[in-house]
Image (cartoon, rainbow, N blue to C red; front, side, top):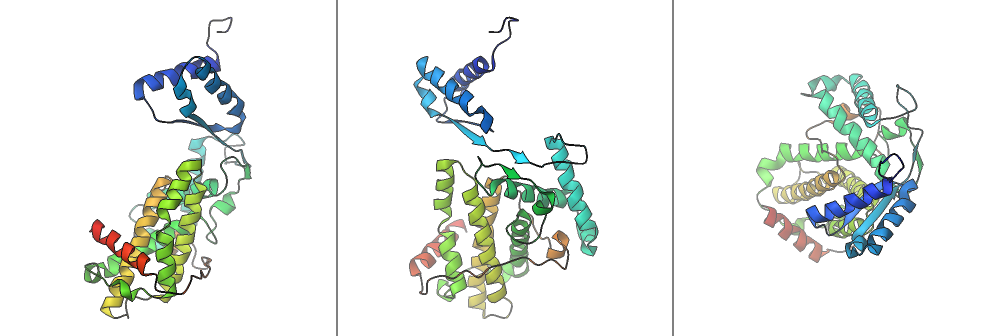
Length: 304
């Protein structure tokens, strides 16, 4: 205790940890703070063990780095409310220059969702412990690996389902998914559980971010090269199920990161007509990959 009778930072954390264990009987308790608190939590956990609380070994500190250069119109000191308002304002300004924006039912909500996705992806792309230089321009760029790209990919795939889903989402033949683009996507989809496990082990969201960005690039390539409209019904149905699986995994991954996926938003509503989304060609081993196809089919049938 201090001389004025108030408690110390450490004693409050000790009391809070004991109280949380009594209330929740947790398996693991994770403290997420800036890296300047690392030594403090090491001491707190050690004191708890000395006091006889073996569960202190299940307490974990996850430090994060410093975001440099984050400024809003209100000045150098940045609060969460300022950041959220800035995101909404900048996205609305970008959308205002696009004619189709007026077709949106709720442009404010769209601006906020796209803006938050852009901010979250930039923040989670690297190691949590690493410092990085913040840039509003980089956050909202439409090229490359950004949250805007993830939102656009999800919205485009959702639109694909809405347009063609009624006629094709009944049954499908996995033998129709033999193209290299299809096999690449199937192989990548099968890694989702592995990526989630890895992120849970080291508590690093960057693994999920990297996975989703690669999945979006693969989907962009497949969307260009695997048409549905002019394909035979059996082929079209298989491809639509493939795109549906991509959208489902993409949506689940985005939600894990705190991003709300967008639906039925055209490319022009998210970015200027002159902007092009960078995509890269992903090469996969040749072969039929029958095990992947069978697992993919059984997973979708269980969902239905």
